[in-house]
Structures are given as structure tokens and as C-alpha cells.
Image (tube, rainbow, N blue to C red):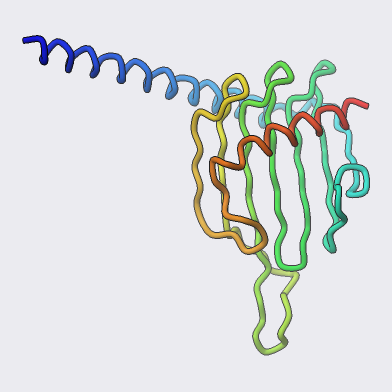
Length: 171
């Protein structure tokens, strides 16, 4: 009897805990949809030398999207010789809630020994969901060519970058 009660208690508690995380992810998705559907933002754009610590051969761009003086989204593009890395950071009340990353790779042409810069395909996608500065869920698909494969260990760097971008774009 005691084992049954313990088992049922464990089952209900874990269902409740995972349900909370799932609800939070659903709320984050709705917020991201709302941010992406709004077309009334004021934008501020920085070029590569204004936000990159090291220059890249394909350059970079950082764009902040502001609503009522609050930063709600940051779009980051960094170009390399064989790919383009794009990350979107989403904020609620100046707190990072979601990051979507994508790496687009240029086709390599064996006959010329170079990349075809007119054709890109998505090689990797990643999603990071945050709640109060803590990673609560992540998802990764595809392979990277230009960077380390995405993983949960990337979360502290994304949080640090988001804070730095928040400060840079508010200047």
C-alpha cells in the first residue's frame, strides 16, 4: 500500500512539473508569434564593427526591434566564407525568453574548388526556451559547418550575448 501511494504521488508530481514546463513553452511560443506578427516596431541596426568582437569575411549585422521603448527582438546575422549564421533573440520585459538559431550553408562546387554564393540551404536549426534566466527546453536539428554543434552548454553564452546586445542597442 505504501509503495502504491509513493508511486502515485511521484507520478502526479512529475506530471505536474512537466506540465508546468510545457505550459511555459506554450506561453513563450505565443509571445514569439505575437512579436513576429507585429509590424509597428522601431528598429535600430548596428554594423559588424559596432557589435562583433572579431570581424568576419562575410560581415555582420545586428538589428533591434523596439515597442514602446522596450527591446522585444534582436536579429543577428554573421557571415562567414562557407555559411551564414542567423540568431533571433526574443525578450519579455527585458528578459530573454527564446532564441532561434539557424545556419545557412553555401553549396561547395568541386569542379571550381569554391563556394557558390548564390545558393544557400539550411544546415542547422536550434531553439532555446528560457524562464527567468534558466534554460527550460531546447531542440536541435541538422548539422553545422561553421561552428560547434549547438547544445545546452551554449545557453550561458546566449544569455550573455543577449544582455550585451540589449545594452548596445539601447545606447
